[in-house]
Length: 182
Image (cartoon, rainbow, N blue to C red):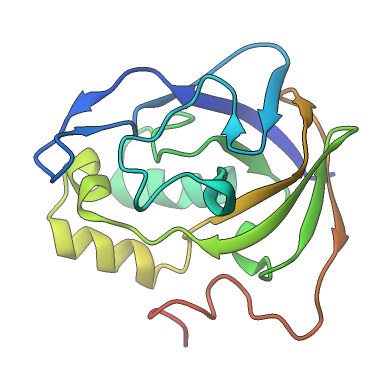
């Protein structure tokens, strides 16, 4: 059954060469039940709110299966939260998710897929890889992960199951709406 393996929040703001001057991409796992509100995980922040966060990008989800791909490809460990994700999953193809698809996480939280993550230069700097090269490599891999809107607030815990509640038949997948669509 698909489930949450980790829930991550910002560990600290890091200096960054970008326009904002800091980044909140340094997410780390937290223990125990975590409250999920309209703007995502309580105690999490986004430094660049123009491109991250808000109601339509309240949560960023990334799959362990995709992390495993990158760990092999890059020959390095990628701990939970390292890609800036709030929720790491296993057993669900998050990249096949369709815009408007709804999931239940745990007993109460309901979320809706809104868009793909579009990799940026901050992410490239975090990875220590050439900027545009990393951005395109990540995008072309089609392993972007979705942003989610919170439909119903509640509490989740690592280990909670993820149930797909509805999938709009005519909606594009998160990959279909990127420049990397095939």
